[in-house]
Image 1 (cartoon, rainbow, N blue to C red):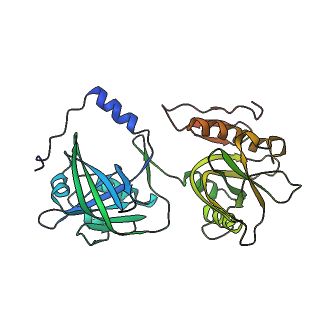
Image 2 (cartoon, helix red, strand yellow; image 1 turned 180 degrees about the vertical axis):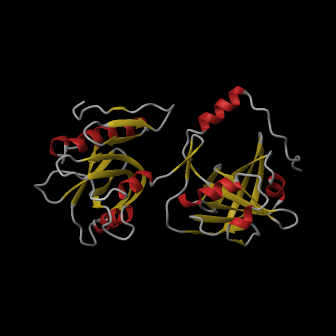
Image 3 (tube, one colour; image 1 turned 135 degrees about the vertical axis):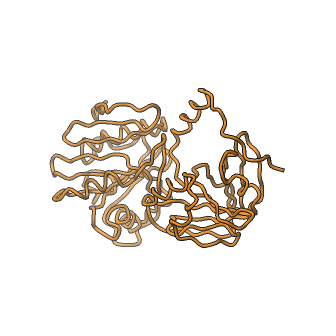
Length: 336
């Protein structure tokens, strides 16, 4: 038998510091839903969600004992997890509140296990509760996924008490007329990085695609370019943004991870090769800016601590993404 909903705990200075430290971990944002004993929908915003198993398909969420809907979750037979898109930030705030009209503001339907499934989510998982475990001031719910769906789009992120938008820089560039933008990616496979070139006499560079070139405009066009060359990759976070003085182009570079590498099966526009970090052809790279960025990437990959680099007019600056907030600082020269 689960205990009644606990009162809001009196947090100590140490527990608040612990919470701030946990906030350094960048997460997605979900809305977790269920129904209470009268069949009424209940829901809350949560980022304590993770996958557990593929076979059988299991996921878990953590529910605070102080949550208004605690009893509904622990006594219910099922729940759903709805992963929010970047555009659903207002919905995240609404479900984090104590409003009694949460479900009036969103389209939803009942899943197979009775819990509300929210429309327009990036993905949703309808679950049958299979395990409940008390853990400190939370309860861990493990659910077996009985139905799910996913769609395209960009997720809503959360870190250090703030929402994170992955479109911020691209949207800003898109509003500036006359700027030619190249979207690229640093794709790694362990301690190797993928470089490409147009032919055997050309310098090595990164896979790049012109903004607005195809459906989706940016990342989708880049992924299509990679697929034509037999490269399947996952793109994650923004890594660098800089201007090329020679051409006036702005380059936006993402981090990525190689999934598979095969021969080209379309109109491949470049040759490609995976270079171990200690064999990168530094003297045959396309630009000093690329060399500087790759040297930084190799250092940060080893430390698993990344920053975002911005160079608008030769005054490169770097902001760290881990640890305490730090001011922009000059980026070391390419030969450092």
